[in-house]
Amino acid sequence: MERRKRILITGAAGFLGSHLCDRFIKENYHVIGMDNLITGRLKNIEHLFKLENFEFYNHDVSKYIHVPGELDFILHFASPASPIDYLKIPIQTLKVGSLGIHNCLGLAKVKGARVLIASTSEVYGDPTVHPQTEEYWGNVNPVGPRGVYDEAKRFQEAMTMAYHTYHGLETRIIRIFNTYGPRMRLNDGRVLPAFIGQALRGEDLTIFGDGSQTRSFCYVDDLVEGIYRLLHSDYAEPVNIGNPDEITIGQFAEEIIKLTNTSQKVVYHDLPINDPKQRQPDITKAKAILGWEPKVSRSEGLKLTYDYFCGMSEEELRHKEHNNFDNYIVK
Ligand code: UDP
Image 1 (spheres, rainbow, N blue to C red):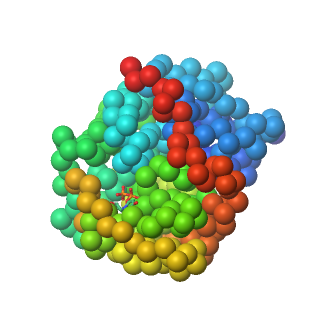
Image 2: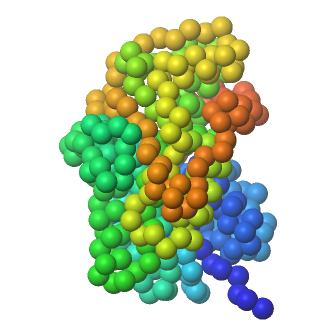
């Protein structure tokens, strides 16, 4: 009988990591989840603990990684991923993208595993090319508030490519655009949980700037399908995965107001520094190489996500801090 494929997923308890664990369990892989639970939550994966083909390590991937046994694949998804998070923990954000990927690549080399890394549309910064193609090099401020995330991800791509070209390691790079769905943290500062949380608590929706900045939102199941296909492809250059359906944040707030049937209004706050004015993925490559395109419309995806948040207890909904930052000592 053929051996079950073994995959290590870093950031397994996070929003994307947990959905990836589910997908690879469904595909009958042996899944080894790893997370230090700074921004991830065990709640996202607790349903997997009873399975014999799932195991979990509470470990910081910025430190040396040891995984016993064989490994076929590594998905590096550990990283804070929202502006609020990486402002709170800038050094860890830089470390997980740099030391963390170095450890993952070293482990992959020893095990002969293929590595897929989660990169981001943030490598394009505040883009001057629209929509963003993979050939665009970006417009990033290295010392701005987003620099710790953007530059860590750019370094991560460079390091991954170096292992590919120098060591002949099999590597894949996905550039993820704004993604949403169940298991996002209510108060991670991202626009969708921010708006839905505000609507559910009866607060006004906070638009940063005048709301004319754009984003393109991809439902998580579509993203996971793109990752699955890219991992099994033979393409080592970066690939954008996202939904090109672009919308202004002002329009997005209107959609959330309608969806949640709230009588709340929008209020305007200052735009954060270096907040990208526009963002839309060019997915020509993903279509051609992976035969992939998003299937879930924003109205369907938002409904599914809203249902998830509606299932939260009142206590959870009103609890401002869903993580253990306060207990976390920044080293
Ligand atoms: N945003 C907003 N109100 C909020 C949270 C975010 O208007 O309460 C804006 C934010 O300034 C940005 C957009 O929504 O222009 C998307 O923000 P998010 O943090 O979700 O993602 P990113 O900026 O990383 O794409």
